[in-house]
Length: 229
Length: 248
Image (tube, rainbow over all chains, first blue to last red; front, top):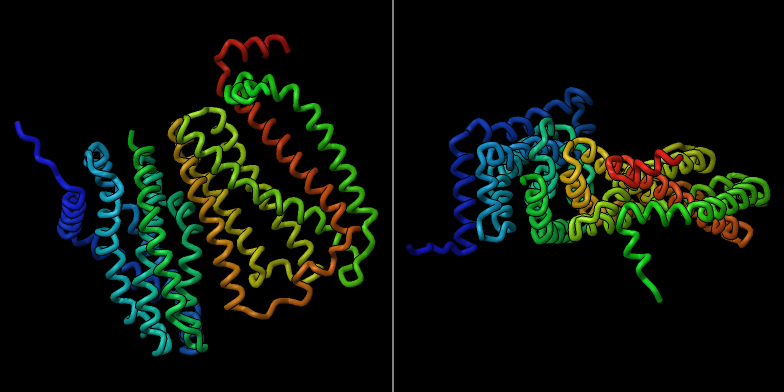
């Protein structure tokens, strides 16, 4: 009998492909975070004020919080179905380092739930009267920031994957952790208007991204091993 | 030097026995420091030329605030021990440290608000980085408590909370510096008298020092008492606990 060895990168891409395929076959799940982002963002003008000036002063914060909540709500899917059908256990049993598998799952999750939000953000920004010069900062800061939210949220999801009701506890765990991203994400949108250098904020967000890419999947992997016995 | 007593601390039974001997001393020391600190702070500190008698709140506030910062490191160290060596005692400490830390953070926020309501004219001020980062430390500690209560299986809860404590410990530091930066950049105007530098003579920092020691002792005593409770609860089927209960 010959044993077929899979390389680490092979395992990474196999997991990525599998998750993307599953997401593609469930198109409704694909649309939901996107719809949520649209709806939440359009509730703010109704609740606060349709006044363009007022809107433009809050729009960057509204967009970031809407993106944060959309990412949080989409999180629940990250490991749940795999946990329920048992494929998560197989993933844990595989000889490949779990780090890369978790990273692949986070990447695919961001591609189907985070990236659409980033792509549609200029449209919502227009509806919320964000000043024109802030479009590019918003887009770039979301592009760098939302993967960090996914990676951090993944830790919370992995810790709570076996629990019956997770919705609120997941939010309680994940939201306080997202504060630094929220701070620098919104600063990146607001401050360049007052003459600050955009690159500095993007550099910090980028640093956060690489920090979380390096460490968060390790924590997620450890959390999965705890949650799945 | 004989270090076996240190290893013995790892077993719940010896921990219980050893702390039984320590507790009277710790409680006596705590009582002495508390009485001296509180009386000194509340009765004898001269009024500050700017802040009047409100500096007396600060003595308690500073001590509790400083101590509340110790909780995440305690929980992270205990969590590491839980994850690596699976020592049950470490988890019993961590389990009780989380709600206690949340209380300390809350008292810090409350006393800070009291002082702020007089000095800054407001109970809450987003422009103060210490307030905001303390608030998020409070939230993070509560999230550890919430996770603990959400997981039914004791062993699983122990390891999950251990991991969350380690992540939280790193996070608190990042949040602290982010919030500070956010303040510097976002809202450069702070209310007048925001720094405490006006009140740093020896007549102020000496009672503060006494108070800090007292609060740290209070932390040690309450954590030990809570851990002993936890030991009795978890080991209630063990012979030594039943003997102990029968003899008392």
